[in-house]
Image (tube, rainbow, N blue to C red; front, side):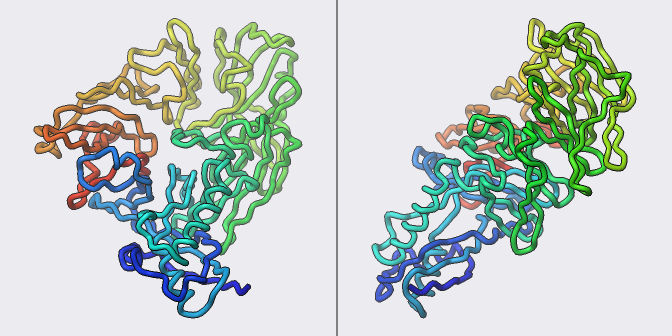
Length: 507
């Protein structure tokens, strides 16, 4: 059985050229596999996971259409991302093989679920499947058999993990498969579109990516996994274990000077450590003698890329009393990490050790660190390193009472047909943003209802669907922050067709 490796580019126009052609004498040819090599994302101002609709009126049929990855140009036009594959042929050779390969490439597509930016250099395309548009219309023969085998084997192999994961180099679109054995999350739920959830298990420092195996949730019933470093090897990625699973790693946090904060389980409590990539060393966070106490429990948080030590006070049995906590500097020097000066301290901080994120490791890109204590009223605690204080206040009206609603301290809540409330944890009250139709006056007169769908974290915008007087349904995006906050944007203007967008990521 002769195997031939052929590299060619997926060109969308070939779909129409070959979709109904016969297989002729090539009926005995069978393609064995197709491996992704690159994506055409050059020049993209944004990337969207979406599907094209026949018209701007979305129908029930449109809802079942498969999503694809699109790049959005500076003028708002959608261009479907194309790919290159490595094609491996199981049987056949010569020109007939090339013909089948071209047709397989023309038909085969990727259906992603969502996309994230990882640092400045990488993208993560998550929960991907192979699919074949117009499958039923493809003539029986070598092409259809090959496509069926490739699609079914690939999708079945990634069924339990909700699809395949890929890392994409932003500079040239090179794609690399990211397997569960190399730290990719196992069992990532479909449709999961979290905002800053990458911060405490998956982030980039420079052009290297660090991941805690097991991802954002328990893997196989255990919260503890090893830590893997992903580096760029040019034609491939290098995966190396930097912290073994024996350390019982629970969270990893980006720190100053390129170090990584590590939260490990230690019997009943958590133990903070620091990893130095330059020397591949993992050291305990040193607690000065004057701060060592049986009732003190320590952790780490990362605020705007800098580590801070957190001291919480407990009796040995874990009861939060005298219920006092403090934030300290962390001094990084020559392979050591030591608790430094006290920045801020507060009594009656109401921190629950077993459940609160402060004590199990958390990270934020914002300049302040906040945590919410549920109750009546709901209380917001804010640690501000610059102001050297821990402030507390009751959450204002419209503010969500769950930390997961906030993206770097900002939530969009109580959206309706006229606007929404922007809830910034650094402010004393929510700001109401009315929908601004100044850029789409013709559509405003036609739209009879606007229904909020969800707050899209990737582009900090509220997604709406609008119904016109003609019965058409359109997708609108409304930024919630910045100079364009409130301005209604229609991202479905492309000839006579439109796009139903599930994720939009600004580049």
